[in-house]
Image: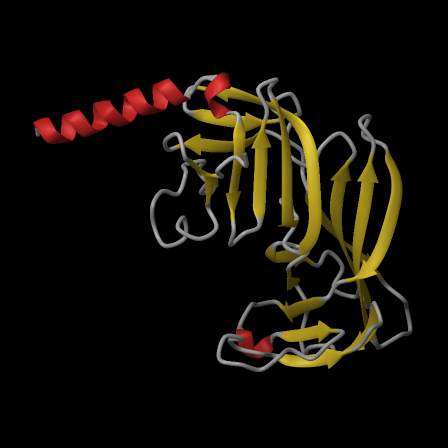
Amino acid sequence: MKRIIFTILSTFVSIAAFSQPGKISGTYANVVSGVTVTFSGDATFRYVTREHPTFYRYEDFSENGHWSLSGDTIILNPQLEKKAFVESDLIEEENKGDTNLLLTCNHIKRYIDPYGNTIKTDTLQIRSLDYSFNEIKKQKRVRITAQPTVRCSFAGYIPKEIITANRTNLIRKPAGTITSIFFGCFELQGTKEFMIRNPRSNHLTLNVYSNYYQDGQIRQLKFLIKNANVLYTGQKNNGAFIKDNTRTTTDSKLKRQKSRS
């Protein structure tokens, strides 16, 4: 018991001593995730990574901002309010007399100024999208993709594929009434169900929006201080940090880098 209490107190003292602006200055990195963050003594930071921090895709990214300290937690850009990075909607159209079913899938990058105005949009094809009607059983999934999925032991179940570079495609209409449609893709950051309001709709348009904010993509991002050399970066949905397991040994830790003389 004494040993446990001593360990807890030692950890607390270590964090308390480190949790001062002057002690944080330096560069921390993770060679697996490619994230590098440099903290300066004037409470500014530079964040550099190979994978965009708010979208599931490899895209070179860098950003400068301000950081603050709250107990044992570093907060990047605490002055910026949290905003949605990914949004989506489904538009239904009924073309009377047309028995075909059209599906349009758009990935729309929106560039938003500090006042909330969209100043530019780029509309792209969703790289690889799975859909199914009414239920999410894998046997009912269909994939729309520009490139065939590579078949390997890590690929998992690969549904029937429609290989196309078109954003609008004629698809097979299921028997019975359509009550909902499920979509899953990286741009959507998972799978989402959309309810069908008009069962007679025969042109469905999925829009997935990636929001790029001019005043900062990093907004109230938190790092937990483990000690003078390690920061935890991964958080669960409830906000708790992921600590010392298989994942944190790879992509959810930043380690202090030795300064070059």
